[in-house]
Structure formats: structure tokens, C-alpha cells
Amino acid sequence: MKRALVTGGSGGIGAAICRRLAADGYFVYIHANRNLAKAQALVEAIRADKGQAEALAFDVTDADASRTALEALIADAPIQVLVNNAGIHDDAVFPGMSAAQWHRVLDVSLNGFFNVTQPLTMAMIRSRWGRIINITSIAGLTGNRGQVNYSAAKGALHAATKSLSLELASRGVTVNAVAPGIIATDMIDGVFNKQAIEAMVPMKRAGQPEEVANVVSFLASEQASYLTGQIISVNGGMI
Image (tube, rainbow, N blue to C red; front, side, top):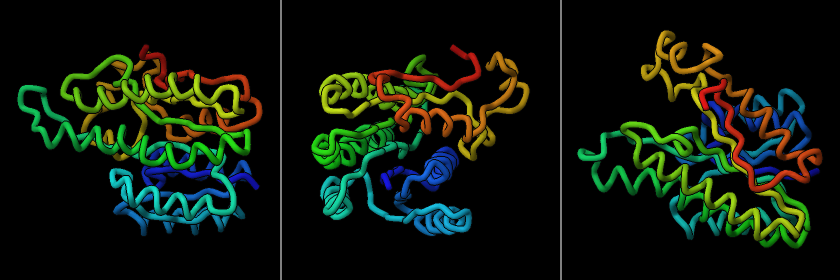
């Protein structure tokens, strides 16, 4: 059985990805930082549906803690599917953005990508099979007012995706990014009302977390073996 790790797996999109990968037959490690109880509840739900999952907690911004947790995880077998989904936003217009806001957002999305992916890569290379899937954002493609930090972090992940895909292409490891648009999760509550969504999205609705998870499922599959270095935006036609 192949093993998958989803960082930020207890959130809206992350939970949908965990459920889908478990349904696809992966043993899913559901990562959390502060919401371990929520991740454990998701584990129980997946097991109730005959899937296999386990929760684990570490801070992706802590390089040493991440490496320690991940090296223990791959001591006997590689993680073959890694979904880098952990991310936060801390919005402010740039002239009023604090250094703490800037660093906090980049630390989770960008440094977290390095801290989690780098320790797992060599084991994937040795097995000559792997899938690295980075969950980014439409903000990393188009930019967004009040989110210079978030857009910078996600845009950097797009560049990292393309560069890493070139390094790993001959080793049977693919690297792709999924860039959601407006998705119906707690993150958009109070940010976009129905009228705003209809004005912004050609499909006139928010996407569902499961629609993002479906793309991740495909990218993790054997059917996507010739697809690497791509940024696939799930946005209802916004761009």
C-alpha cells in the first residue's frame, strides 16, 4: 500500500484531499499543527469508511522538528505521495503590512514546503516513484490586493514546482501544483458573498473542496505519470 502525507490535512481542502486519497487506497498521514484533535477526528471518519489513516503533529516552520518527525516516518518505507497543503494568510495592504505578517505567511507556505519536502525527496528518488503536489492559489498567478505576502509565497511555490520537477523528472518523481480559486471553505466565510462570487467567477459559484481533491487524486495516480512541472488552476474560469 502506498503512503501519502497531507500537510494541513485537517482544514477544508486538506480534509477533502485526505478523504479522497484514502478512498483511492492510500494510507494517509494527516498532518496538523495546532488542530491535532481535528485531524484525529478525520482519521476516525476515514477508518469508519474502511480507509486507513493516522494523524501526526509538527510545526512545518520548525526545520528540526519537521526533519525529526519525517525521518521517523520514512525509516522503513518512503512517503510516495506528498501534498504540501499547509498555508495561512494574514492580509493587509502592503504599506500597512508588518514584518511579522510578511514572514509568518512565507514561513508556513514557502519554508514549510522546504522543511517537509526536502527530507522526503531522497527516499522517493531511491524508490523511483513519487508524487509531490503543492497546493497553491490563484493569488500566486494573478496577485491579489491586500495579499502581497500570500501571493509572493504561492508564486514562489509555482517557481519551485517547475524547478524541482526538472531535477526529479528522470527519477520517476513528478512535481505539480494545484492553484485553487474561490473554494467553499471556512477561509472564505465573511470574505466573499454570493453576489461577489457571481461577479468574479464565470461559473457563478464557489468551487467545492472535493473538486480540488479530484485533481490531486489524478496527479497522484499512475495516469498522471507523464505530467510534471504543471500548475493546474481550479477556479471556475476566473483566468
